[in-house]
Length: 175
Image 1 (cartoon, rainbow, N blue to C red):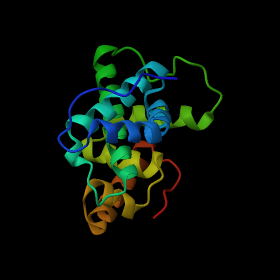
Image 2: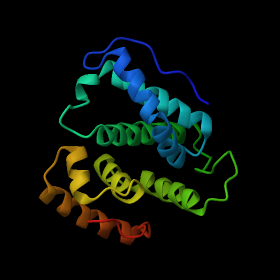
Image 3: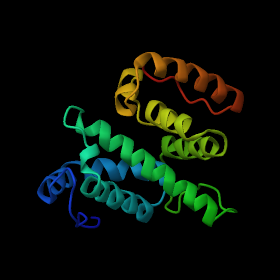
């Protein structure tokens, strides 16, 4: 299927805990990454880096938070970083999948992400991905980012206006 879980030592999670989480979440991480990065090999690179981060930065995997919120946030950040790196390494290429797909939603998501990468700052990009691609509620986005709901409501309003001006506003998220 994909690469084995990464090896290393942890500051917050043991290797056994990461292996258990890998078995549980690797398919979810792969699917999430695949939607964003469009290439299977790149998606597996994202999976590897997400679980490597669990080993090296496990203390960030807060016990009080739902594990999935941390996994979504790290997966989104790693995938977006990979896209930024690809944009620098392959400046003449557009974000088009190497592997053909008939899934219009995936193609639309990739096109949105490409436009977002060109026009949004880091925080806006993260909020947009969690809200519009992952389908999290504003409350869930606030929890994932460690912000108040009030802050997220304000930022989402500003983000929505900016995306409308860019012609890059997807269907409405849950509130």
